[in-house]
Length: 499
Ligand SMILES: [Ca+2]
Ligand SMILES: [Ca+2]
Ligand SMILES: [Ca+2]
Ligand SMILES: [Ca+2]
Image (cartoon, rainbow, N blue to C red; front, top):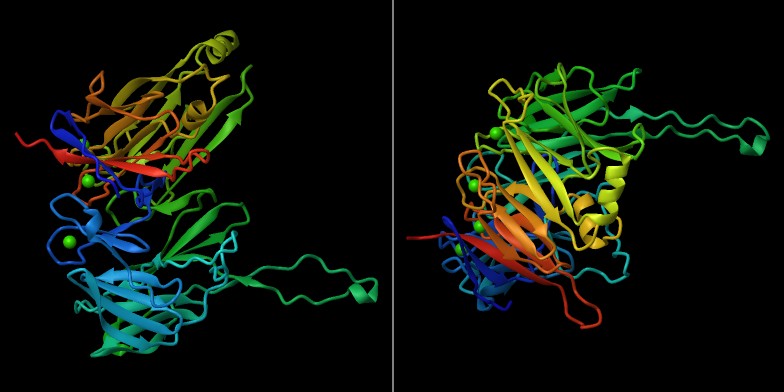
């Protein structure tokens, strides 16, 4: 990790650049705006500063920096352990073993090592080496520690085919498992029609059953979300909330779960959380090519409901795929709708073609529809920002930059760069420039607050790398095979510009 320092000043924000090749930031979840990252945060050395938890090492923080000398490899007793962290302690689940380590200075001190019979892997969980045939030697970051009993010591929860396996800490070690059955009943899938002739072809298939649901743990409650199909092709979502009783072997409280069922909604809508109330929300974004106009045009449509499917709201725009359609733009805790549209197809066929063949600048519009306290999204946008995105060549002849634009990779509204709770905008407005627009009282300035340089071949992401509540900008430069250089990642840490 080479640490180069570049200070870039924008208003109340300074960017400090660091080379951090171990950090990877991918596309955000389009329905939450949360970036996908290869790390988590935890304070392993208990100094009150957030450290970076990677699948093979911990990067300790010292005053906003992650010095190379304070990169601590994770203990690796066997191949592929699943790591988790609770209260600064590192847990390793592997083979038939559990270990707990604590960081003492720069060394891991083992505080527990015991054998445990873990349940068999669920079908579909991969145990085989990757496609390259090279077995992965480092571990993965898991989420199996949950403090169900609320006593400050986590239970280990592992979903298995026959129920939820819960292992509780019983003083020195983790004790016997408790199998808790909170799963919905499996549905029978009827087999294809069987041949009756010739006799050799006759077989009786045992109808396979299928179980598909989602589980959420929160304190001592387990929420199970499952769906049932309707002859109409629509779907009902069922929610069961079980309360576990740690004192009774973690069995669910008598009287069964609290249940609710949604109205019938289109099958492609996914459960998500759009606001803080207890009614489940659903949303989906879909893209298709409209053939009704002389020139085929990309259309994106967002459909969502915040009242359990009773009413649907939809937003449709002429747009390629966008990065994210829901973010909490104003920081009130409720997600707001982002509608982007491209100016590439404006006007008639002739104008669109001329633009594709000869113009290097794309016009792009971003519109925000805020969610109100009743869970409704405003019909007319609360904010409209027009952007000009310059490519290296006209779209028809452009390569990677137009492809990036079509993938939604040029415009990112998921970050909060100055930590005020309001989303800020990062746009590649030029092949070699990122423009940053700070959200000032729910408005963006016409010209960027500041710009950062970026190579044409690099891609950018936005995520809070150091866990200070301010999003940082991450630039990944792809490796060039000829030069033999490995991928290089620069993190532009957002810092408060102290007067
Ligand atoms: Ca720390
Ligand atoms: Ca909001
Ligand atoms: Ca902000
Ligand atoms: Ca940050």
